[in-house]
Length: 141
Image 1 (cartoon, rainbow, N blue to C red):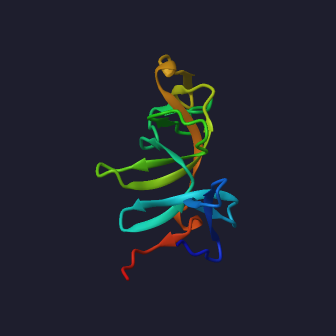
Image 2: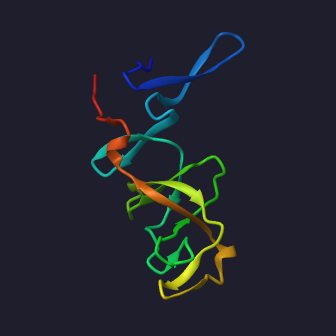
């Protein structure tokens, strides 16, 4: 049976017959649901995420080509966050996302609309420090 902590509170599905099924955690400080995700050697309770590639170095989310765009691998309407994963599938960074209405390519002195943006899902967003999310360790009884 999950035990509430100072920040994380258990979220349940409550059946009409009185049954309860644990679903996820609610982070009362961040005011959002989360579940534990591996970040290499640590676990953090993060909200639902879409998978992202590393921030782009040639595609930008602003008309001045200064803010790198974030390329998503799926469009999840409920995900307000994205996680960059490494080759082993472990998350390495979390970004607070906003849909990129348009993306651009070039340099600050020569910034043009990106011609193939309709074939990919792009976001803009700032990296959220992992320390903002509750950490956990695995323990055995």
